[in-house]
Amino acid sequence: MSCCKTPFFLLALNGGPQLPFTESVSLVVDCADQAEVDSLWTRLSAGGSTGRCGWLKDKFGLSWQIVPRVVVEMLQDYDPVRAQRVMSAVMKMTRLDIAVLRAAYEGS
Image (cartoon, rainbow, N blue to C red; front, side, top):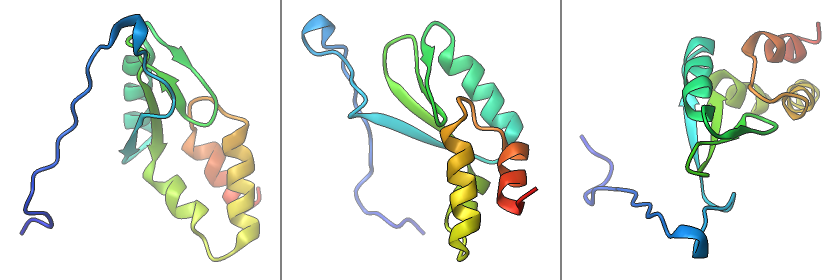
């Protein structure tokens, strides 16, 4: 059963130099595991650029955030100290590394 009666779609146009992409529009990818993070990161950043906290720009200048699903769960933990350790680790990374983030979450 679908949650929406109206289909959702996204249309992005190349507006040329007069209307460039900016970070105000970005796509977030919910990744199941590190292999998916690594694969998407490599393919989408090719010809583009990488930034902090899992952000990158593809070769067209469109911004993406590649996020492992488990990181969202860790950031929503009831223990604010654990969540803050994860956020601090995220802020130091470019591509997000689940093993490093899990270590921060567990305080090790």
